[in-house]
Length: 200
Length: 177
Image 1 (cartoon, one colour):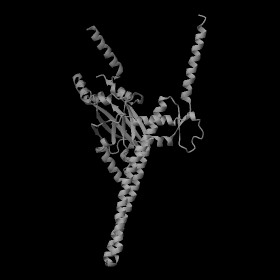
Image 2 (cartoon, each protein chain N blue to C red):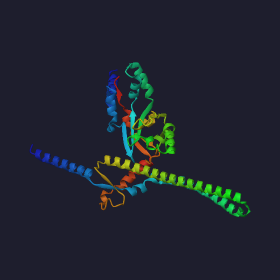
Image 3 (cartoon, chains in turn purple, brown):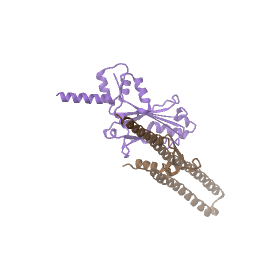
Image 4 (cartoon, chains in turn purple, orange):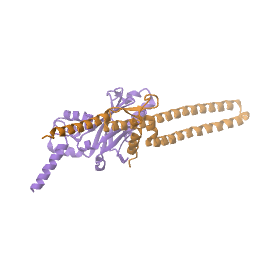
C-alpha cells in the first residue's frame, strides 16, 4: 500500500515537473511566444513572414470559460479540447495580409481567397519523418478585409498517439502563389506532449 | 599530499585540451557547395521529374492546338479557290482569331511553367537552408558559408568542405521510410 502511494507520488512529481503551469493567460502567452520553448516557429521566405504557433488546450478552455471559473467545467472542457491539436498560422507580406499583395490581379486574388477559405486542407500538410500524413480535422480563416497585418488561420488536427509519439512532425505549407516554394516547420513533439497548463 | 600539484596540473592540461578542441570546432570556417547540394539532393530529382511531366503535358496541349490550327489552315488554302469573297473573309477572320487565342494560351502556359519551375527550385532551397541551419546549430558552428561557384569563396581547404556530409544527412532525412 505504502509502496503504491509512494509510486503514485513519484509519478505525480515527475508529471508536475515536466509540464509548466501558469497563473495567467498572459504569462503563458509569453512562454509560448519564446521560440526556444518549441511552441512558436518563425520563418521569412522571399519577403513573406510565416509564424506558426501551437495553442495549448488550456488557452482554449480559458477562452470558452472567460472569467467564470468552474472547476467541474474546466475538466470537461479540457477533455473536449484535448482531443485535438490547435495551431495558429499567420502569414504576411510587408506587414500586411497576403490578399493585399495580390489585390491588383483579379484572377490571383480570387484564387487566393478560394484557397484560404476552402482549400487549406490541400495546401497544409502534417506528416511524420516517414511521410505518414495526419489528415486535417478542420480549419478556419476569418476574413479581416485588410484590417489586420497578417492573414491568420486556425488549423486543427486530431491528437493521435501514433503521431504524438514521434520526435518531430513536418508541418508543410504549400506555395500559395507567392513564389515561396513549400515552407516546412519541424514541430518538436516532446514540447507538444508536455504542453503548458493554466492554474484555474 | 605531494602529488596534489601534479594531479592539478594534469587536470588543467586535460581541461585546456578539451577547451581548445571545442573552441576550434565551433569557430572553424566551413562551407558547402550550394550547387552540388541542389543537384545531389534526392528531392530535386523527384521534383524535377514531376515538373517535367507537368510541363510536357502542358506543352503537348499547346502542340495539339497548334496542330489542329495548321490543319485548318491547310484546308483553307486548298478550298480557297472555291470560296466566295465573303466566305473567304469570314474564314480568314476565324483563322486569325484562333491563332490569337492559341498565342495567348501559349504565353499563359509558358508563364505557368516558369512559375512552377520557380516554386520547385525555391522548395528545394528552403529544404537545404533548413537542414544547414539545423546542422550548424547541432554541430556548434558559428558560420557556414555557401559557395555557389560565382567567386564568393575563392579558396578553401578540403577539410573545410562540408558538402558531402550535409548532402548525406539531407538525403537520409528525405529518404526516411
